[in-house]
Length: 78
Image (cartoon, rainbow, N blue to C red):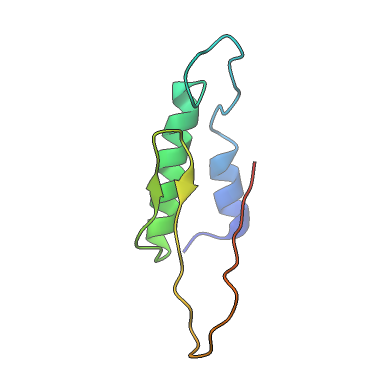
């Protein structure tokens, strides 16, 4: 399994800059490529339902590992 540092070094190689002249979401194809890569990364660590929607948002869920009902936690990054 890759270390966090190795993953970070992989991620920074992607051009994720936006294009303000674009009328698409995401605004560049390279952003969509990176989103697909992130979804694959999630699947590689066991997030079975990792996916990318039509707007380039990456989603995935990790099931609870306890029997008690606890609040759901959402993580969002930009």
